Length: 468
Ligand code: FAD
Ligand code: NAD
Image (cartoon, rainbow, N blue to C red):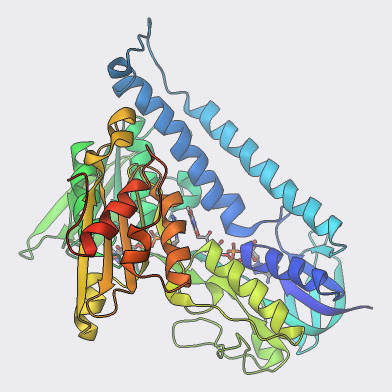
C-alpha cells in the first residue's frame, strides 16, 4: 500500500493548490479525482468555460452593436456559431485542465483517478473506472470535494429543458426564451451570454434585488444596464412550479402581490445556489461531522473534528469562490507543515463577469449601517473618464466607503469595464489598511479605468474629485 504525508480528495482550485503547496513544503503528496480531468468545477464547468463563453458572446455582441460606432463596417451578415463557440470553450477548458496535470507532474504529486472514500481516518479507498479498488494511507487528509448545483424541492432537473449551469455551458442551440430562476452570479453571467446571442432572457429572483448579497448600489446599477440590454427582471417573485413538455417549460411564480404569473420558455436555467458535495465520501467511517447545511464542519484552522483531516473550499462554510478555495488550500498545507498562516475573509473579493463587470471587497453600506459604523462614501462615475469615453464603456461607477473618523477604507464597490481587474487595487490598499487619502494621493496612469478609484477616493476625502 502506498503511503503519503498528505492525500487530497478533489482536484478543484482548493485541492490542486493545496497539493502543490504541500509538495513545495516537502511533503509526499497524492491527489484523488473522480473525473478523468483535473481542475474541478472551476476549470471544467465553472469559472473558465463561463468566461470563455462570456468573451465569445461579448465579441459577437460588440460586432453587431458597437462596431459601427467605432467606424467598422461589416459587409454581409455577422452570425453567431454556437457550435464553434462551445468547441472553442472546450478547447480552453482542455488546455487549462492539462495544465493542472503538468503542474502535478512537475511537483511530483501522485494523481489517482477514481472515487475516494474513507476507510478510516488515515486510509482511503479509491474506486477506479475499471472497477478496481486501490487503498492508500495518509497521515493527513484534505477534503476538497467542492459543490454541486442545488435546486428547489419541486423542480425536476431533466438537464434537457430544465438545466443547471453545467448544461448551459454546452447547449446545442441558442434558446428562444431562457427563463432563469435566481438572479445571482450564474443566472446573470449565463443569462447575459444567451441574451447577447439573441435569446429572450427573463430572470426570476426571490429577493427584492439581483445579486442580493452585494452592495445595493451594485444591484441597482447592474439591473439598470442589463435591462437596457433587454434582459427582463422579475424580482420579489417566488417560483412555485416548473412543468415541462418535450419542447417547452412553464414556470409559475407568485408575484410581489402574491398573484400567480406564468412564464413559458424553451429552456429554464436553475441557478439558485450550490450545495456542498460529500456524496460517496463515507465520512462516517472517519468520524467526520457535517453541519446542518451539509458543510464539512471545520475550526479556525480548517481542521475537522478529526485532527488529521482538514477541509477547504466550497465544501466548507464561506463564499463559494475559486480564489477563496485556493487561499484555503495554501492555508491548510502551511498549517500541516507547522506554519502559522492567516486568511482575512473580509478581503476576499467578489466579482460578477457580466459586462459591465461588477466587483467588490470589504463591507457593503448595508453591513456598515447594520453594524452602526460611522462611515463616509465617495463615488465616481465611469462616464466621466476619458478612458471610458474612448472605449465606449461609460456605464458604472466606483464607490469607496471609509471610516468617518480614521479615513480607513472599509469597502470598495464597482461596476464598469475591467473592474474585475481593478478590484485588486482595492484589495491591496485594504490589506495594507490604507486610508482613502492614501489612495487619493497615489498616481494612477492616465487614461485608465483605474483613475475612477483615485477619483472616488478623492470624493470620499472631502469631496475633492477633480473630474466631476
Ligand atoms: P470544486 O472545484 O468543486 O472541485 C471539487 C472536485 O472534487 C471535483 O473535481 C469533484 O469531481 C471532486 N470530487 C468530489 N468528490 C470526490 C470524491 N469522493 N473522490 C474524488 N474526487 C471527488 N468562482 C470564482 O471565483 N470565479 C468565477 O468566475 C466562478 N465562476 C463560476 C461559474 C460557474 C458556472 C460555476 C458553477 C462556478 C463558478 N465559480 C467561480 C465557483 C468555483 O467554481 C468554485 O468556488 C470552486 O470550483 C470551488 O473549488 P473547490 O476546490 O472547493 O471544489
Ligand atoms: P447565488 O447564490 O449567486 O445566487 C442565487 C440566487 O438565487 C440568489 O439571488 C437568490 O436570492 C436566488 N434564489 C434562491 N432561491 C430562489 C427561489 N426559490 N426563487 C428565485 N430565486 C431564488 O448562486 P448561483 O448563481 O447559483 O451560483 C452558485 C455559486 O457559484 C455562488 O456561490 C457563486 O459564488 C459561485 N459563482 C461565482 C461566480 C463568480 O465568482 N463570478 C460565477 C458563478 C458562480
